[in-house]
Image (cartoon, rainbow over all chains, first blue to last red; front, side):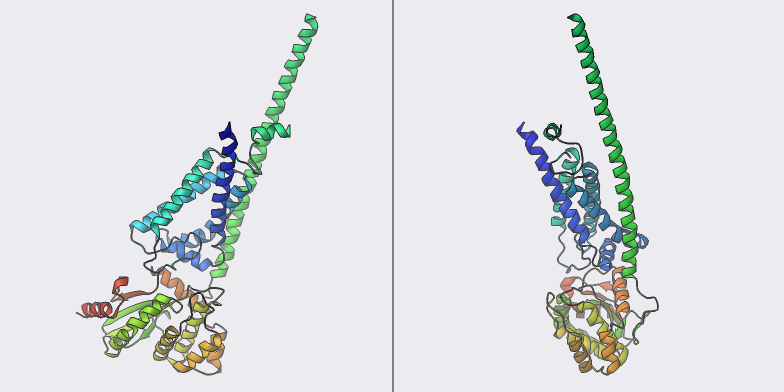
Amino acid sequence: MRWDRVAPWLATAARLLLGGVFLVAGALKFPDPAAAVRAVRAYRLLPEALVAPVAFGLPVVEIAVGLALIAGVFVRTAALASALLLVVYLVGVGSAWARGLQIDCGCFGGGGRVAAADTAYPTEVLRDGALLLVALALARWPRSRLALGGRPLPEEELVRA
Amino acid sequence: MPDTAKRKAARRRIEEKRAAEAAARARAQRRQRSIVGGVVAVVLVALAVVVTVVVQHSRTATDPTAAAPANTVDHGQVVLVGSSTAPVTVDLYEDLQCPICRQFETSTGPTLASLVAAGTVQLHYHGMAFLDTSANDRYSTRALNAAAVVLDTAGPDAFQKFHDLLYANQPDENGSGLTDDQLIAYAQQAGASGAAVEQDIRDLTYGDWVKEITDQASKDGVTATPTVLVAGKQLDNAKLTPEGITAAVQAAHG
């Protein structure tokens, strides 16, 4: 019984955390589009023709996912989308690490700025991994408090009826 | 009695059925609403992606006819200091606002200068400007543009002098940058003066050129400054010292 009361609030906290991170990460990539292009190119994974569209388009997707999570609409879809994005980021950062590239992840804007000894791969991988767990848990138990969308919780149903 | 009981039961069944139907209708409505909402959301996000890609493309676009400064090589993208017949080429990727570049220039700049003077080394400067902030009023870009103006007006040796002056007087990375007036004064000290120089420094005449060579550096795979290549081979950071450079140049010279 107690768990039933706590779980939706935990889901709300997960939504706000994950949504906040994605919203900030997306927003910080807008002011300097040239840096965003350099950040994506620095991974040396994409052909040149795809670098700019990804650099410009990805922040929009991040912001959309972030807004959905914060507002509490399409929570399960948004959580799955953010999990997918995080897997992509983990693969990107992991491969840069494995190939010995000296880049920062460009996760929160910037790009190429890293002073050669300043790579932070372990931190980046840990952070993305932790966020991935949060996203997966939220996709499994998406019902939360303070959400605009989704089915109402049982007590709320009673109140509304 | 059994009659009323039967009727009651029948009524209850009807009510239950109606309630179930209403619940089903509500579920179907909700499902339809979320399908419509989902489609609308996907379309909106796709639209936002397209609009953003177009807008950001135009923000990063450079004029293909943009002026490159005179006295450059490699399609106007590289500044060659020294003799073009010197046997060992040293490529330098630097940002005039980068503090580690300043450290490198302070420690190793004189060594490079003497290798150039001895005719052993030709320096290829690849400018980059990626440390612009609103606090420094885009100092990276303004500084590299000013260096291009000096190069265009007074040639590679004046460029080298201006480059050394700007590193010696580098503003704090989180500070406000040098003003255009200060850049003009250093340009004059390096040997480039006059109304045209002042105007080109203030107007960012080579602003698009700065964008292009910064982008080219990223295409060259450079992600950090300073990046130094001796005879085409990148040096480890530990070797960015007078001894490290001298050894690499000697090895390349064979």
